[in-house]
Image 1 (cartoon, rainbow, N blue to C red):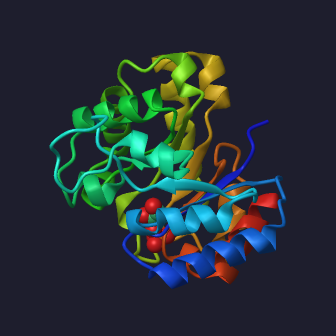
Image 2: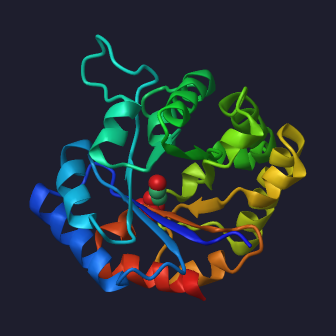
Image 3: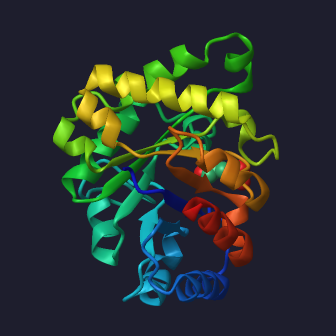
Length: 252
Ligand code: 13P
């Protein structure tokens, strides 16, 4: 049985005080309930204030990105070791806003994933197709390429620390959620590919989150699908009541 995992990607939102308040409300409301894994991924500057708010609670902390080097002359970058030191257990790698907005390639993301795992972080590795790619019936090809190159060289043992997030780019921040059929088909495809790239045990074990316009009213439908193991939530993770409703939907 794969435990459900709901993560909030706060993107470049919140202030120091609203981040602290949001993290505190989420953690206090969950009261250590471990039926669903829950994480929040605040902007870098608020990681320490949120880490403090989450101390002793069941809510996990994640970064939204990291560099592939341990340290160095990389102005503006943050290393996976720094994320570990500040209390992160997870890091998001390969979000479409970085792939498409900032031109991050599969090879570049592969280096980041390896570095994050070496630093002892778990990785939420995002994949997903553009609308034009879906319309051209290229969804599976795109996912296959992102998985093959993005996870190249990882061992099955390392895959125990990797969570996949299927985020169709056309569903992110648009209010256009994938239908249950589209989501299940993509997740099953991803799991099948993990079986080919690694082994059947790895494919059965890896959690695959869905992301893209997840809201309280569609969360239960998506997370009841056989291959959907949780959600990576953007906009709705910024409102404690909405995020908590999505976590509750994961409990079923
Ligand atoms: P929305 O939930 O705002 O569509 O964002 C999804 C996302 O990008 C999570 O990483």
